[in-house]
Length: 397
Ligand code: NDP
Image (cartoon, rainbow, N blue to C red):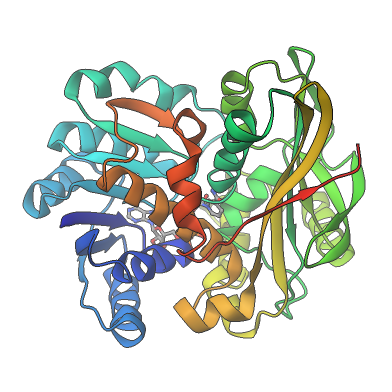
């Protein structure tokens, strides 16, 4: 029986705690630590109510390496699951190395002062982790996460050669607010207001934010307008899917969301540059985050489904082949099970299954890895019963 330390008691941390608690044979002891202990306590109470299990809680500032090292040394986890914010990735990786435990996260490092999405800073830990005999698994949420495993499955079991991949992310649900984000507003808005970027014929092509879109018929949801964005998993998949000619990432947005976003951008509310307000420095986007609903609070009234998957084209046995491999997840069902909406749920299940792969030794090697660098089979055999069943459907050639 293993011990796990979960850092971050937000929307995703809540799901990870529930999912680990459902699986006592793997997750023997659970400690949930966060910046605000009362939020960790509220999650622990919900876990006790729904899963009939006690989990311990603690306060930790994950920006502070010595404080985190002390907590790890005291609890002695086999794995630390980082579901705080991308700002904490490097300090938590550092703390895991120093105190001697494995590491997993769901989003690549971002510096608070500039929005850039790249694995460079975390891949730089590779040798140190190898030398210490420790493992770090990067981006084990849904996208990145489960979608990387879908791509690995296509590469290793469904195709001889892959030409193109389109990762398509649709939230077809409705939360009843005029404008809200489904995960941390600051992180979410930084991501979608960046220029779009995709990879074609060996080079990156940059386009203005939200300037390319297409309709796609999402299983379980229907046709939705989808916008080309840059997303971090493209960087690792380009390296790990040999022969790939093009890879793109798409996300759906409704008209009302886009209108609000445009207005907020036009008046400067999405800026991450600090401004002077009555003698105090404030970051407009951080102030906006205060005004928006907490993503976890959307869960109670959420209806509808998410539908996320990978559209892969290539060849098998000399014949052209095209498939869509995907999951459909229902906001109301995930709320009943864990008190969370489907965006937090799909991410949290990806993290819990990735953690299970490490703790059971199915995916275990020293170094810093992305999910598609492991065999997809054990993960896919488990992720359905863990809450995210998947399907493969043929697509027109
Ligand atoms: P939330 O904002 O809901 O939760 C973040 C939690 O981390 C909060 O409890 C917060 O504490 C805590 N936290 C922040 N800073 C620190 C710190 N310095 N020390 C300790 N705890 C801290 O975010 P989400 O749950 O929505 O997202 C969690 C992560 O999941 C993010 O990195 C996000 O990018 C990622 N994600 C990944 C997806 C994927 O598919 N791969 C999809 C969606 C999200 P406090 O309560 O005090 O604010």
